[in-house]
Amino acid sequence: MIIMNENKPKKLETLHLPILRRKWQIVFLQLISTFSLVLLLRKMSEIFGSCSEEFIMNNSPETWCPAYSHTKGLIWFSKSNDLLIPDILLGINETGTSSLIGPLFLCALITFVWVYVNTLRQKTQDLIRNITISGFLIWAIIPFVFNWIIQSFSNGFHLPFGNEEASLNYLGILLEPFNLIIELLFLGLVFAPILAGFVGIWGLSKRPISWAVGYFLVIIGVHALLTFEPIFSEIDLGLQPLSTQIGEGSEFFGLLSPFAFSLLEISVLILIFLESGISVVNHLEYAVTLPEDAKINQEYIRQFNNIVNSQLIQLVVAISIVSLITAMSLTFDDLLISLVEMLEGTQWSGQVQESLELRMTYGKVISAGLFIFFIAGLRYLIPWQNIIGYIGTNISRIRN
Image 1 (tube, rainbow, N blue to C red):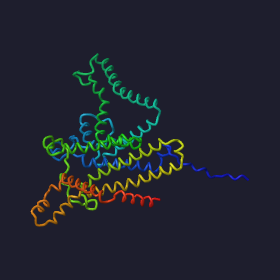
Image 2 (cartoon, helix red, strand yellow; image 1 turned 180 degrees about the horizontal axis):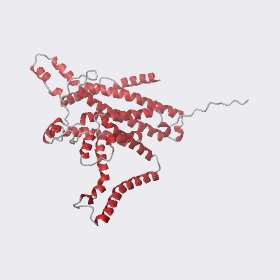
Image 3 (cartoon, helix red, strand yellow; image 1 turned 90 degrees about the vertical axis):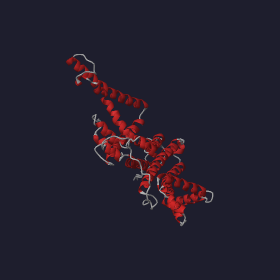
Image 4 (spheres, rainbow, N blue to C red; image 1 turned 45 degrees about the vertical axis):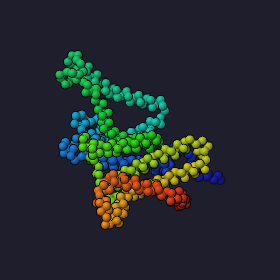
């Protein structure tokens, strides 16, 4: 009797790119980066996506202003031109988070096509590119020429523009496909960093990820500049200025006000998106550069798995510590005021305690700077490296 061994040989894990892209740690980091990017878009739209109340009263709710919102520009453009992209993909009939679903789906679809095309041969990529450009030109030119020729047989030869009868002018047909570019431009003002982030995360490229972070920082900086009081009083573009007063702490263990907590959320989401997205690319780049024999070496595989697992723990621990220290630095002014309250009986202490400057935005910035200076000085008194090493060692023991 012949006994068949039904146990199939176990497939060994390797460090080849197709296999690594399916590892749960890599996919998990990519999903974290993607979700943080989507949440960042939502938070940015909530804070920077509305026009000022005075601007709306002087105009109308549908009037466009350079806020971080795609619907305002598209609604303004739709008054004079028919939109080519379906409304369900533009989200112009929705409000709040619902208006972001359609464009996010469009970004995800473009990312999938982009990543798939980049996996094809160069000749195939060139063919697809040429077909796309040719299709756009045919869409613009063929209807224009066809209508001009047909009308020339019916009404005699005439120029395609400048005629008294509107039906004998065809430049609108020629320029109609370019309306699609304008629609994509209004979408791109908001969703360009989202598309770049998706391409960077799933297409394994660091440059789009860095570009997306830079775009968000530019938006925040430009908004702060255009709503700065001396500029805002001279040139009112309709942007909603942020509050100059932070408010009392009621969020994050009572350290932050709701407004400051929203700004901290933006900072943390940017860090999570950048750290998780870049780490995936770095890990896979390292694996790709390994020699072929190292990619099947079990010791290299074990070290790679340890590095990726440590990255997940580091992401949680580092972001938590950064958030806590940032919150403490933003509430450092409360500590200063509490210290002043201890100096009762002096006129100076009463004036400082009642001062609004410490409660305003630049007061928070100054107090945060003092806190960072204070923490930096402690490095000469406290052995931070030993403490961090001790924490890291115990985390490794717990994980093992």
